[in-house]
Image 1 (cartoon, rainbow, N blue to C red):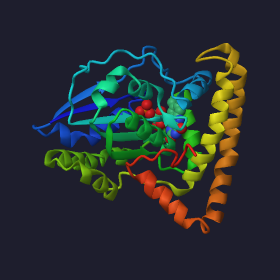
Image 2: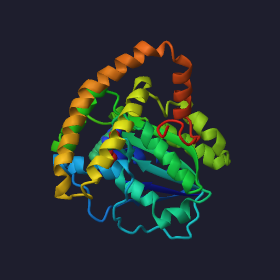
Image 3: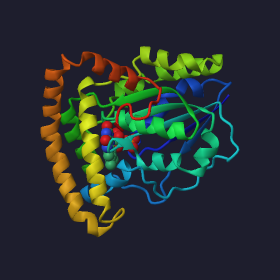
Length: 305
Ligand SMILES: Cc1cc2nc3c(=O)[nH]c(=O)nc-3n(C[C@H](O)[C@H](O)[C@H](O)COP(=O)(O)O)c2cc1C
């Protein structure tokens, strides 16, 4: 069995997650694991300056690719499974991973291939995974499993701690907990067993049973609202130029101001409205969560309507 793992990580968090989760596959002599770390030609900084951090927003959200270093993956490589490990940037697939998915290489190797996605993020991954499903769909690949690692702290707390981590390099308690990383091999074992038995269909239900995904119910409405607002802001900023263009600095500053204040106000407000109105929408909320936990893809089901 040949398995390809494509991943990108700035701080090393996602690398740690991948290494831990995939231990059972690494230890299986019947599985050959090829690791491919994706590298942008101009690396994204870490820690970021706030200018650079917000400058990544329009292109992340609009899925505009950056220049990437060539990979070592042969064009005619044939894998039994591809594992794509990515982080969300601005409710979207991070630019390096999104860029790879839009490359000719991905078009060759993803076609008709089963895919497992591993997400490592703060806590807002729903729209990013919808964009991932849409990409995989357009590559004629088949998503067979998804595992999500996220920061379980309260939303506003994790906003504060992640900004401190991303902008000043101070990790503290931010990010995915060490406990979750240490327990990740239980998911790898499910992947290994499904692969060995040739029964990939059973993988995702088993992953779900083992807690691979937990949709935080009130974040569904926050992501929907934020998506609509981001769509406006991304166009508004890009009208003034591409990445790094000084002409868009004023609009980026406005976006940053709006985003930070918006999160502080919007997050508690949408949570409150969500819980007050949820009693009238239990069926719809449950259907949304069922869909978001699943690997199926339906156009316009969550974010494009
Ligand atoms: C520019 C940028 C935007 C981000 N946007 C989101 C987001 O929308 N949702 C989220 O849950 N996490 C977000 N994060 C956090 C990342 O998903 C990830 O957890 C963090 O960058 C560490 O990943 P890494 O070191 O493995 O690359 C963002 C991080 C960066 C750098």
